[in-house]
Length: 372
Ligand SMILES: [Fe+2]
Ligand SMILES: [Fe+2]
Image (tube, rainbow, N blue to C red; front, side, top):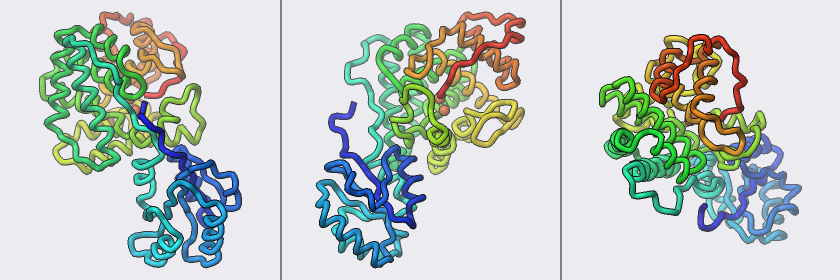
């Protein structure tokens, strides 16, 4: 857990920016409030003023409000853009702690305030081969997720070296001890990403995938959910089902990850494709682009299968934990529905010593609620 929690963040809005403030607040997982309700502000809150600073009546109302409340936290004012000099001058006259352009508000507020960051476990990893390989991958993951908000460029060499370390670490330690170590030492999104890496490495080794493609697959596995760094932890780790609004926010993660990675040099197209399309289904029922059939590349299909297998077998508060055999039966049912590639599911079963009889592909299996 973070050592200290940031002060609560509240978006105060006037009528004109009500919709903008509510959407922004929902994406950040924080509260939006009308100026008229400001008396209910939590103590010491940081306040974002999403108001029309070109309207002198609103400016005056804001000034009176600040004098009356004398807030203990920071006051952040949103303005229309870099050239909005009137907005900036008014914000500064009102005593703004900082002024943020509306178009950049989401990322700026996310980085500074709203989202407790994903964290690595505080206790040391075991000094086994599996432990060393997982520690290296975990640190790389933390760097990657932090990089999205700080706009740090990705170090491709370091990413590929973590991927190669996973492949050799898993080869030496064996898949089950490797996955068990991840489960004991990580939780939440980092656990999920590491498990996907372990499953993908097992798959790559089983089918004898050449080193360049295996590294590409592992790099994609490390990066596939990087867009979740802009999803509040309150949504990512929420026990129980997500609301329709929360679902919309979480389903932005493949495109958000892709948009961020597109700005990075040197990432192969297959990796970018796998990140954007790892939630597509062969029957066109997936997202974000509802791709179907051959429009989904082979490496992406492999990542999708490994992603779902990992999600089914990991421990999360919102779903039961499936055994590998149960997970394979569910994957087989998805093959039957035309969603997943049958040869990949069969290969993954073999990689885990689980044989799927052809007849199993014809049996409907109740699918649990999933967030991959
Ligand atoms: Fe995932
Ligand atoms: Fe995902």
